[in-house]
Length: 129
Image (cartoon, rainbow, N blue to C red; front, side, top):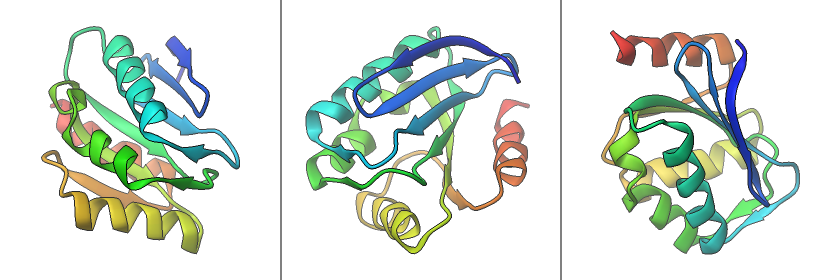
């Protein structure tokens, strides 16, 4: 999949691929604050090109995400441009962050954790039909 549009914030690289999936790749070893979450949301909205799309969030390498950031990601305008969120996890830490986000913040869009990227993309493609 080719990158069509890409924005990199302090903590995350975000792009739209040629299939229509938005990718959010957390940069290695970074702590995410509310300000970072605000910037991530703005970037996701920008690369969505005004159309609701599925999102593949790769949090495998991030260090942490604070409560305010998680709340903003769950309750922001991101929900207007994201159909579903597949979250890539591969360690106890990233799985804990993903489960915590999903369990406590109750995002209004479908969210599912994956350790296999192909399975995650296939799940997201179901929302594009």
